Amino acid sequence: MKKFITLTLLTCSITLSVWAERTVKATDSAISYTGRVLKTNSGDVRYDWVGTYFQTDFTGGRIAINVSESGESYHNVYIDGKLKGKILIKGKEPHEVVLAEKLSKGIHRLCLQKCTEGEYGCTTIHSVTVASNGMLKAVPARKRLIEFIGDSYSCGYGIDGANENEHFKLSTEDVSKAYDFTIARYFDADCVVIAHSGMGMCRNYSGKKLPTMPTRYAHIFDDADSVAYDFKSYTPDLVAINLGTNDFSIQVSPVDYVDSYVKMVNNVRSHYPNARIFCIYPHSASIFLRAALSEVAQKLYGMKNVYMAQPMGDIVKVGFDMGSDWHPNVSGHQKVAMTLIPQISAIMGWKMNNNL
Image: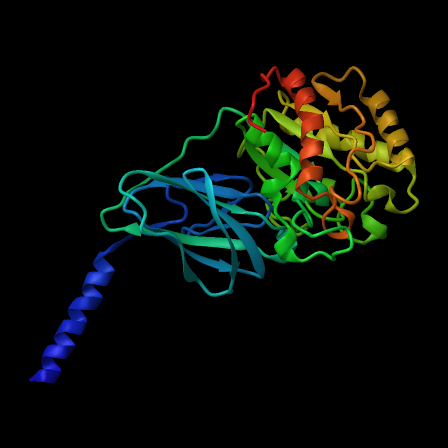
């Protein structure tokens, strides 16, 4: 008799646990994605580009995801606009990850942002779960959208590294602290980053035989052999291009770089005819890269809504502005952002403010 009672109570406990949750597919309309994602017929959402994020408003005090990962990816968890933690997601089999629990009553906003690059892992969100009495509601897009096309600088590579002598670890990459997301936050804009460390406009770092950024730009994933991207998925107000450092890491023909750059600008223009295009001089640009970009400026002169940034000069300093492998740390990225923000304000007609 005692065994029967124990079994009955255990069964009731399991039933109550199931009833205590409400789960929706990752493709549910209550979940808003920013960036390039692939939505499957089974209800999964897959993405790998650095900086991609999803948002949802929810009630019930708890929210979790069912997720799988091809490799390893770090993600930033924001609740109500505040960073609550940076989590490592790994494991090729779907599993639950609790993002927040025991929150106060009322509506809360979740933002989960992939802060590391696609070459280390592709994330698949299978479903989102809240409490049984909870609800989910889509977060409307911001009125402004900026797309950045770049390399390791745009990824936030090594941004949390102790100094220039520390070698890169995945945990030291965080695009949320990089110049691009700093600029987006300043202007209260949504942000899409299409970037990959070591990539160039016509040649990659040290001549690596990998597809350059113009090739990768055509795909949903940070993978040259992946599905073609539908450029109608979103329309940026501004597209910023920051490429060239890796092209000139070895001897390269300036003519090849200039021709590739002009083709890239024309490609962006063909997809986003009304967007403004902002061509950035990398902060570390050599005299050779600066000369090539000056040639780019001449080639693009007179093209509607295309703008060349002002050269930054030697603003990122060794000793206090460097993270891993001679890449900018947070203060270095802030300097870059502060140099570009007034120029973007003038180009876009967006007012300056105190958000930095």
